[in-house]
Image (cartoon, rainbow, N blue to C red):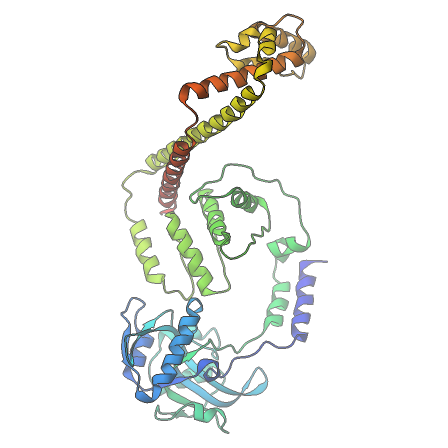
Length: 490
């Protein structure tokens, strides 16, 4: 089955499902607090992202409703569900071929309510102004650019949404009173509400459209239904972030696999791993697009990338972090204090420092194991020493082990016998010494040497090595992040 056929099948199934609930009455979610034509509403609606919260005192009659809306906002803080809407379309309307009762703002913006005591609040913009949900998407940029508190703008937005000629009423009217009425009107005022309006459930149409897109058979979606074998990439990972073995494996898999699934419960490091995958790809000279279903997920992932200290992520869509991103980009475009070559040398030096400590830790742990075996087999040491006396002296046991390794290729057997003869000579073993006995004697000599080293040093300082490794590893991450940030500028 081709991926196009799969998409067409999913489209048919989507069309036959119970329709997704369409939110066309924003007053039903957590209530609508009507601000009428309060100047504070338009100020908050058009304020810049960096503006201070706009002060507002709720009327006595709104006190409980505003408190409930603020509590709803606090409960769903990560989802940013609180909206400031303007120009509400209310009454009976035909939406997606069905007659519905609607209460929808023509303009909406995510906001937060900051309680300042009593009935005083601060309205803080938490995203971008959007014209929705009725206008044709091609007209949206034009309408957003020309946004104005006028009847002319409202008429243009209504015409773009397929509702020409709807009467416009002033803000002395409450839009909720028209929801159950017999005529469709627009109330020219502002209101706070919770929940984003949804008026389109065209999933089936979208799936049918994707089925005809050229090149759909070469996408990651196609690989879910027609997997292909790929060569794994086992090269070193560019670690701007500290990684566990499973996270490092995910980064390597993402380099070559058409689809890589990273799963786990909350707090298991999925976002951390995605950030590492993105940074590893950027280090390889690639560009990365990260998409999420929610703005909060995008912000969390962007924050993880910024904490890494590498290249500044560019966030698209509705985000409270846009101004901060702009400042970071401006800072990143400033001339670097050190040239790229210096940063690369610092990165490679930090890598080498970590590798040295890791080798020291590995050697220390190996000595601990060997010394423990030496104590356990102490009664056999004299017998092993008789087989290979020189192995217990100051000789290169690594060289002896290499000589004992079987040779392959041309004249492999003859070369193996010559190497074994050299190994016996270095270890002081007899010419006819059995290779198995020689192997055991060399292993015992390694155990004895490790025991002597530990006794001379007073034991392994693993705690000091652990702290040193953490320090060098943190330095490596900083050096790699600085190198990667400089590499991506320009």
